[in-house]
Image (cartoon, rainbow, N blue to C red; front, side):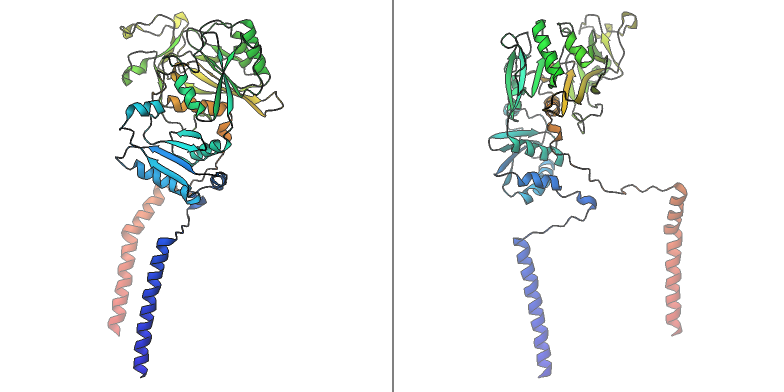
Length: 451
């Protein structure tokens, strides 16, 4: 009888063990729990990102334009899964960009893996996959309120709503999808910049501005307004010297040319390509290649109370060319120091900031770029032109400070060791440790034989 109870206990224990394993397996399919044991929790969403997701009151649709070949789709889905765990109604859908190239160009999709986020009638576009960029995009979607950007018109500027090759219609349409309201600003109709204007854009005027218009722009900047001024090589003297003096910037004469462009297959030396950028908030972690068709170099004349940083700079093979350029004879183009031409590297993009004179704002920002073609309908789709333009507008409108995620890198990822220490470690593993194991094994065998 006692043996039978022991066998029954054994079978009962085995049955309970099987039931427990089955229950765990079933529960594992219904519930999920993950624990991040990495240093600083670097593979989990930060508290800042979770706070942004908590403010989203409805579903968020994310469309990824990623090629089905390779691991890109898997990487995107794995990254967004962290957001979906916090917000289950965040959906992800993939579209093959190769199926409809014309539609991709219309949408401004130039990077494999680009994302479009949609929420409550607003949308954001992303070309980079990082927690900072995605969380900031969600923050902009939550805010929803339109910022007013006024484009100066009436003096041969690039039209904000135009569809001609030199106009900015494609880019401004995409800006409007990012919560920006684009309005015209014609100084023939108004004498000052209207209140509640978040940013004024002076996009490559080709005619001299009336003195009243220039004075209105100067007053706007002096009173704390944000400004984007894009100029061109042939338009360096259009009555805008008072505005340039207010910013402390001078447009250098000539057109910037780069002798290294031929190695990239560019036959026009006036085409400036950049793949590396001076460090600034606009270009932080920006690695896309940009193309600038005709560029004016810029110089800083007086800094005043502005904090000035260059974020666009040509290569050491560039210079300011004063002579007419014949693309059929590129070998005839030579740097001529006797003519006053300046050798590169030369700056052609300045970002200026200072404490705002206006009591309604804490900081005032301005950007001066020696080219407006890079955002035109013709060249917007080249490389990272659109992404760089969006970064410029984000910085000018203060959107770069929406969510400042702290760095969460792993500590002690590098082991600093001298050559002598490395030699000692190698000898220890190759000689000392095997000999020690042999000695220990020999002692064990010797003790067993003595028994």
